[in-house]
Length: 103
Image 1: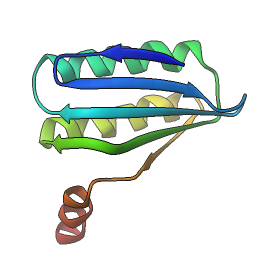
Image 2: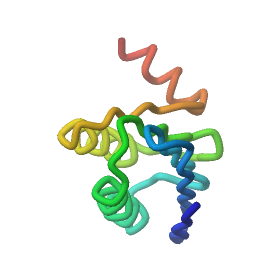
Image 3: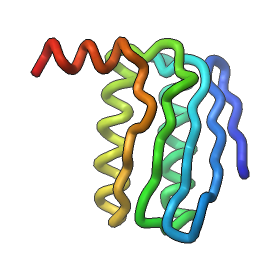
Image 4: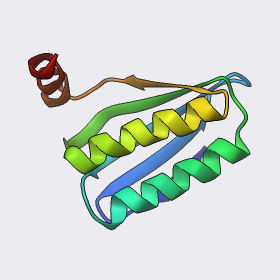
């Protein structure tokens, strides 16, 4: 298990199996230094851990703004380019409601 603490966000990496890595985010995923740092951490982990599936657990994320949502899209594209699927799990209710309204 690896941890990366950022100003408003904590990232916890857990290798579940040779095929699956679970990453838990805690705190805020909002515009600022934390988003750029999360992006760098994820890119380094994508290169280190060659797995087929990464689960990104957002249950303990209190705020995700539009920059944070854009980051999630970038991370998904980066994972796909490396042959890895990124699944978002335990999405906060606010994001689910936002997505339903835009659909």
